[in-house]
Length: 157
Image (tube, rainbow, N blue to C red):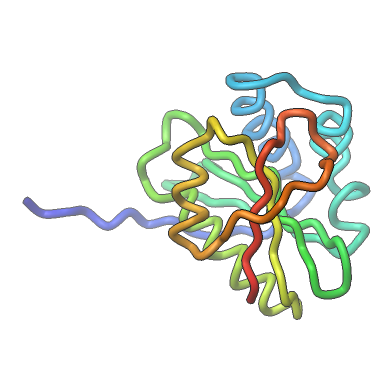
């Protein structure tokens, strides 16, 4: 059986991509949880909430369509949070999540990060499996910003 290589390309944030950031994230949050006030703020104000503080937002493009996104939120000079990763439900299985995660890890290194952290929910098994494959380890959870987060992971770069 021949496996086909999917051609994904990476795009950096630009204002015209902001609606995709909101739509892709709201889709998965609403499917499993509830959009919290902080989600609403971050998703509708990405330039203020993420970029202004030194963070970055990346997008995965497939066949001319934006199908996924991920953010790096600067927590400290050398610590970033991997956050707001979502892939369009109709395009899952193409490897976009792994592509976005690996791209974000590489970008974090380029930005001088020594550590990446993330908050997730223990019911999101495919995401947790991906994070583990990429080297993230579970660490004690400190009270997070999101009610749904019950698991914290980190990757030392």
